[in-house]
Length: 193
Image (cartoon, rainbow, N blue to C red; front, side, top):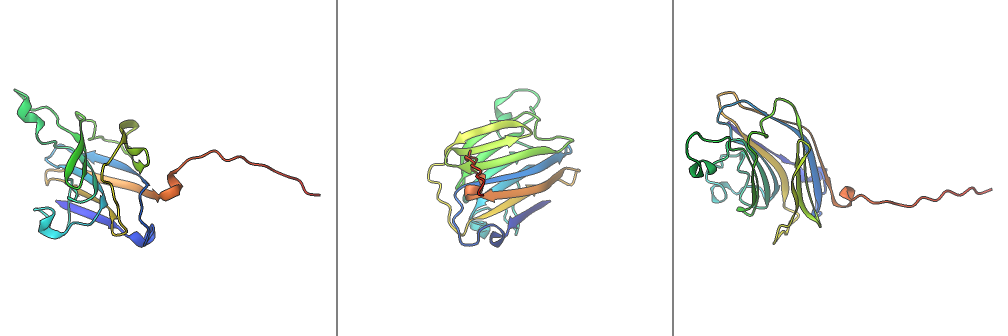
């Protein structure tokens, strides 16, 4: 089955253009079926069949064809054609921007865990950073042509199989703008009187 959620803009910054953000959540992907994974999206919502051929009111692990998409694919397609013999475990972390692959990383079987994995996806002036289960998988990845608008939305989609795959997400938190920057500020205390 395929499902997705769109996070309401009025809860974050209704009219602002969010250029920098940090999304953090806990993720648990279990099972050994043919579930395909989860996607985190920051971009325009899907526009029916023009953007994604399988769009039926929800999107799954492939996200949308517009904006920034971070895909956690538990059934990574493609590498098996390069390997003879038994098919390797092909779990993939993939970043796309406007439908084009920007980064792809083969992760073996590290995405499917029986425990919760902390995930952080951050984009700022230094580029994109993705941390999964304590491992920094992507650091300072530039997104050329990155131009969010006030119409962009945050969304999450997943796809799993009837054979028992489960994709769970908990404690989602999205911070935007200056709230994600860390700085040291000097403090002075005075006694008047």
